Length: 82
Image (cartoon, rainbow, N blue to C red; front, side, top):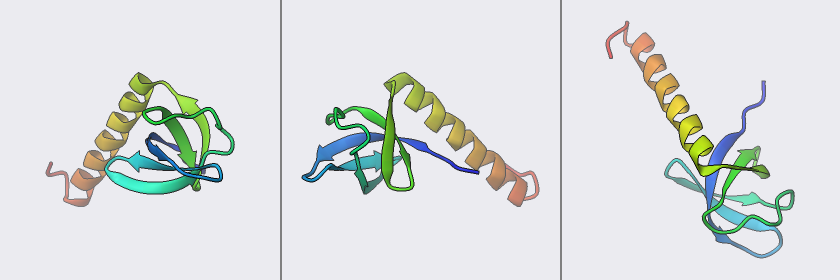
């Protein structure tokens, strides 16, 4: 299974690279596949590459779902205690 996650572009670098914010973690990724991405845009990142653009509202909804999944997993690991 492959997973791509939304990230916000925080700075543009040379040679088709950018720094993105992945839920508080900053990471350098390739933006060669989305060369029109600008600071503040949201992109979908998979294995260190931005593979497409995403609407900011959709990015927020997706990240919220990931947060809910993490909470459910933590509750399951703690025997059902939230």
